[in-house]
Length: 189
Image 1 (spheres, helix red, strand yellow):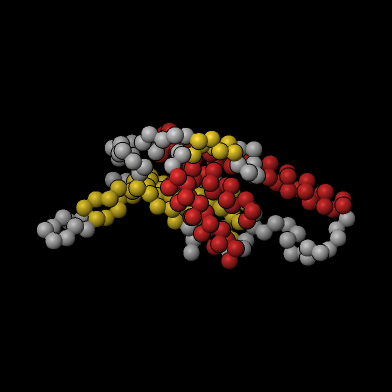
Image 2: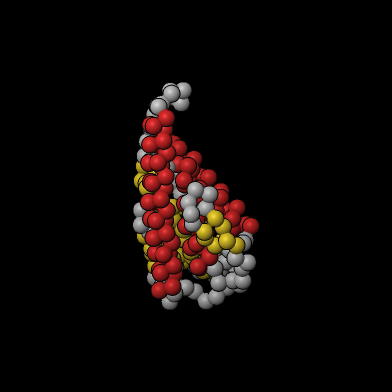
């Protein structure tokens, strides 16, 4: 069985935006690859004018948040670095069933690579106690707003990339199961 891969467009974001961006992307992938009955839940991003759909499975939401928190911890220790989060789907097959052992192996059938470049916000090195002129603060807010608007458009492009890929690439998906597919979310360590 071949493993299909999808490398999503790279997104440049600040540490504060990681949680919103990864939740949106990971839940969108899960929603489009879950063939079991779910209760879809619309979710609005906190920082962007984007609404996405979650499967409505509490265990999955908890797992996604745990992995995002692990990634955030990594990003704090490795500032201004490019990285990937990988979401893999797999089947477990018995390798060589025997009388006394039953080893299983993972057969990956799809991998999604979420490419991120986490950067420090401009002006982060300045001390918080400095009194910048109001015009400078206003300019900084305007820059942040326009950067977030641009990032929002890039996130929407990534969401369309996910939807298009999920709709076009279906032949490699194993027979329908009665649960969410086996998966793992890998973050840098």
